[in-house]
Length: 191
Image 1 (tube, rainbow, N blue to C red):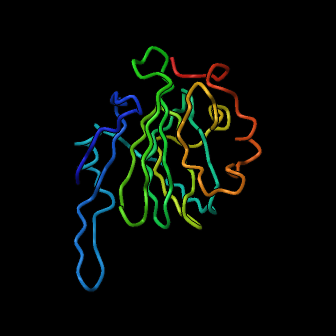
Image 2 (cartoon, rainbow, N blue to C red):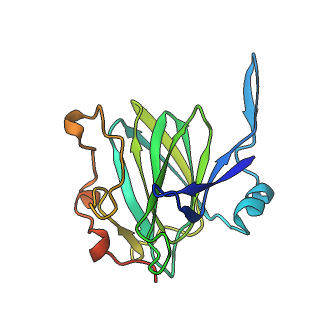
């Protein structure tokens, strides 16, 4: 497995956010790769325990996010696109961090088989680029309605560079909750 630190659009490293690229073995029969290995992940990201797996399917133009959970139930997420392609984003929401309010994004696809590790302290979201996409992610804590929060996908302070070209009206499809999420300046954040 190859491990790279994800950088923000300013070039600063987003502390702890990692892009993981597996070693894929392929031949005329197809391919094989190790999609999860506790020892390899711990060597890259530090000791981590996952307690829940989530799987979503979205049509082109669906934007999910920017989501996170506050303590006492913060979630780290290990995200992988099983079918199709997404643009996956991590936003540093740790007050006092040198990269506070900065974001990094990467295309995850069934083809590249990469995974993005988004540790607690970051908001996460993705935009579906293909006709459909299936996304699987492991979380370090269970979903908590009381701790769940969100930030507007189009917050001008964040200025996330979502690849909206080709979408109907240049606008993503949002859930009702994501459409009314607060701006970063108004959101409950990590200390």
